[in-house]
Image (cartoon, rainbow, N blue to C red):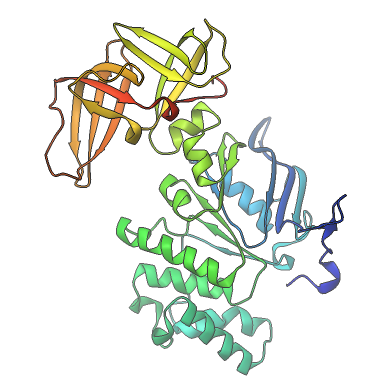
Length: 383
């Protein structure tokens, strides 16, 4: 049931007299613990989030990190053990799912196989008693939005997996919820179709302008579509930020390793100044900006695409390491190299195959690795 006009709070006013938008969804200290006999398992631990109206927001993390449980508490399918869930400022912690102004789309499309596509999309509206003329208008509008206007009379079995997912999306959007919750909706699709649907979902979200909350374990999916991402691990949010912030400036070792591929080097600071220096001996060193004192042991991360691989010794102003190529993998647009350094650290290098000149190094070859100092980043805490 949609939220009534009386239930929607007016925007807050800041100390400066400016109107502040109320978050579409906010979680305040939300936690969920399951009990089995004498044992208890914490699935979500004290999560605080504020998701803005019209935002494409992703909950990202590995299986078992608590992201789906968090979404189910927003939807009302799970009751928090502690904390408060608000929709547009209204406390809905104890409100049942059918009285929350959100809809949910699952990985399983759950379409009625005996109904036409149009009737599948219209199902919820008809159950609410919406007039036939209004139902037909809104269904046609939604089918055009998901580019299935010419398939209205087809049955689900006559559509591809991607088309069925779009029908499920139209069925959820036709009710005009204030927010749409999507639980790994593209997981059943093959890679190429999944990538195409990522762009389609983002286009649809921009056009309808409502809040999307998206659960996924796929880092590329979250980076492609999201305005902001909450990276979850062991029931807690490890980092919240834009895709660029999370990728370029990971807050923890877990985030650095989970988002894309990241090389992590550990060593003591041997020189300070505008840029600190970590020495690995025999002309090998890494430059990085840090407030760490000399002798402090720090973790430094650098992304594989930032690293240059070559046979010539690089400039001493660059971060530079010596290593031996252990593996070469050709992937069409790029070649991936795995290099073992003298101290046993594994470094992964991604090199674009722009020139078509072939491999820069062969398996077993000795190489120099180098990158600009500003491409190194110190992880805030060792974990």
